[in-house]
Length: 91
Image 1 (cartoon, rainbow, N blue to C red):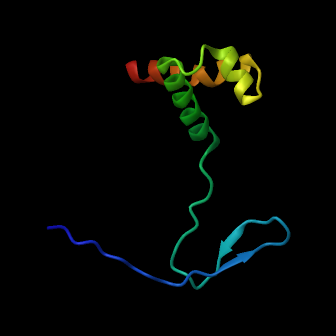
Image 2 (image 1 turned 135 degrees about the vertical axis):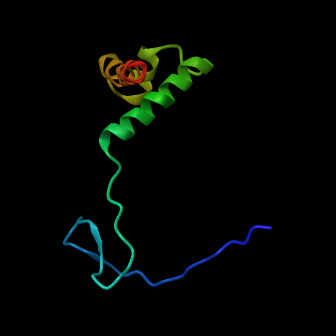
């Protein structure tokens, strides 16, 4: 039998000016994780695009580009991340 644990604590946020990032107050114990790196987001997007292409939900890069409001060349750049990753894993 597994037992779940719950921990509760108060966290206070402070904004830095208009549109600024929210920062934890100095007395809090939790850390700010920051943003997800851009490359990680683009890799996730490339994997999603590949899934859509394989499932037949989209016909090709041109349709992906139209749906994403970007150029087919940009879709190609994003999809090339998968090729670079595959080549790196072979080495």
